[in-house]
Image (cartoon, rainbow, N blue to C red):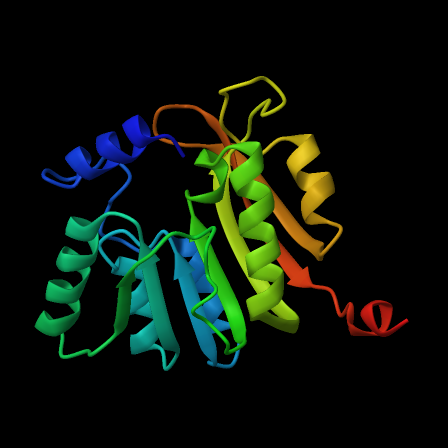
Length: 197
C-alpha cells in the first residue's frame, strides 16, 4: 500500500470511517457461533469490534492494524468491556513476529485493498501462521485487480489464493455504496506432505 493510501487511512480514523459500523456482520456471527473457539487473528482489525465479539465468544484473539489511532481506539473499547486483548500496530504483509499457529483468520476489507505484490506477501505470511484445515474468513470488493492501481478481489487473486486455501463458500452481494462484494470462507490446505517430498 502506498504512503499516500496509508496516510489517508490514518486520517479516516480521526473521525468514524464509513466501513466502521461498530457491528459484527451477521455472516461472521453465524459462522463463528457454529465453530468451537480457538486462536484467532483479525487482520486489519480497525477499532476492534470483531476482536471483541470473538473474545466474548471464547476465542483467544490477536488484532492487527497499521493505523496506530485505530489500535488505540480498539484498546479503549476492549478496556471498556473488561477485555485485555492482544492488539498491535502491525503490517499484515510482515507477520514474522508470530511463531504460533492460528485456527481462524479474519479479514473484513483488508486484503482487497493491497497491491498484487502485497497480496502475495500477505498470502505467504498467512499460509505460514495458519494450522492445516484452519479457516480464513474474508470480505472484500470484487474487482479487476489485473489493472494497475485497481483494488478488489479478482479471479487472478482467487487462483493465487486457491494454491494454499480451498474455497468453502462464496456469498456475493453489494456494499452500502452498491459496489459488488463477497464474503469468502477458505480452508487452509495441508501442504506438509508436499514440502516433505
